[in-house]
Length: 187
Image (tube, rainbow, N blue to C red; front, side, top):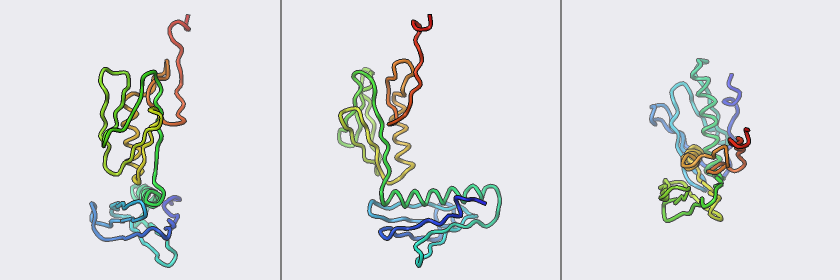
């Protein structure tokens, strides 16, 4: 039994949920609207979603106990819960830049990164994502879609991953970078 999939999702009063037939898989499509925006998710066959208006809860059930349906049961429950949290509170990830001369700034709909190369890196900010830069070294990526926020933060981090010798690069806030000793310390 999926312990995550069996838990009902409590819907706040400021959020509306609609469940319709159709979607990418031809089964159901769940749309969540809230104060920050609207998100939709297509549900695969084998999983059914029901919204109880009296208790304001969304429950998920599966048709059988196949391995794939068990996995999708917990997955879709987590996705719908993240959608509800995204349209009410939103998600954010903070990146830190470490290194002499490394900095970032937002110019229009682009993030400009100076990371020790002979040219600046220009990153186009996708729709639904807000990027703010504080003191040229702290980048905050925010939005209502948890997957998109994480993806954009990972793409920005990949431009200059933290290196183990001096610790220079872009890292998540609170991320520990394991340091190595150089050649001179090994003698």
